[in-house]
Amino acid sequence: MSQAENDAITTEFPLSPAQIADFKRDGFVIVPGFFSKEEIAPLHEACKADPTIGGRLRAVADSLGNPQEIIGWEDYAETYLGKVPFMARMIDNAAAILGQPVYHWHAKLSMKRPHSPGRWDWHQDFPYWYDEGCLWPDMLTVTIAVDPCDEANGCMKLVKGSHKLGRVDHMKVGEAVGFDPVRLELVLQQLETVPMIMAAGDACFFHGNTLHASGGNDSERPRTLLHASYNTIVNTPFIKEGQEHHAYKPYRKVPDSAIRLGDYTDVLASHPFPLRKVKLGDVGHYGYRSLKVG
Ligand SMILES: O=C(O)CCC(=O)C(=O)O
Ligand SMILES: [Fe+2]
Image 1 (cartoon, protein in one colour):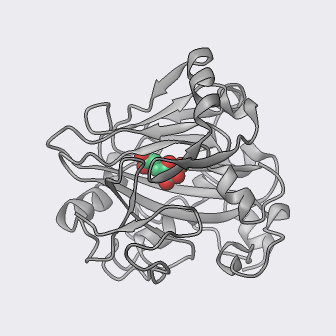
Image 2: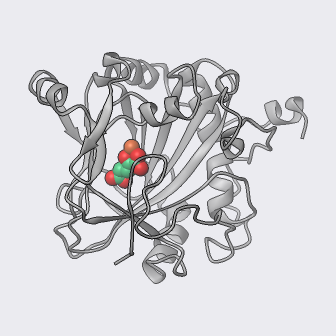
């Protein structure tokens, strides 16, 4: 698809100037109803019916050694999961916030089964992407609630204005890796922490340097989030070796109507997730130890 053809597909759901200003001030903005209940329902149902994603879900250790379950992908596919990250509402709004053309960096389903202690320790995302060869912190994530998320089922927590700290060093924290604990204490004293309470279909756009975490799931309900991250095209990693999956490649933008019109093969059963690169027990390049799921 040519750039001109891509440019002809534009979002029906542009963020307002006030929402973009909130993102710039706070490091995040929550967009209620970004996906309609009808659009999110097929993913909600598929995750409920197949909570290990056909056995392909993997887990990494949190700081206490508890498993935190996740599965990621980068590329376009004809499935629901392969199309959502390339939809106009994702691409155009990421570009509007970052002020430049963008491409999809990676996406993840982050799943917390009922009564599971695993948590995501306090971190920024950009320090990992910096290590992967991105020069500029012009990166963000669009998080879509697949299940309703609240404090009981381990919603994300974001620290308002923390993106203005820039990239802070991350280091070993217990069995995982996270934000410098000395600085963390000061930041949490000085800035407000906001729970990302969302209904299914709501989205949160947050900056790559926004400090965030999530707690365990103390409820009877699962907590699934879809995270899709974006980079500006000019910021493609200067590290080439091992970063082929993160390099900018021309892509086709997907019209906002795709999911609503059922224009996908299936939700996730046939989705071509990339093969897991890290063996059980090994530590991946992000510094997280790979664990057994469940
Ligand atoms: O899903 C969550 O609670 C947070 C996940 C996260 O921050 C990440 O994968 O970088
Ligand atoms: Fe994160």
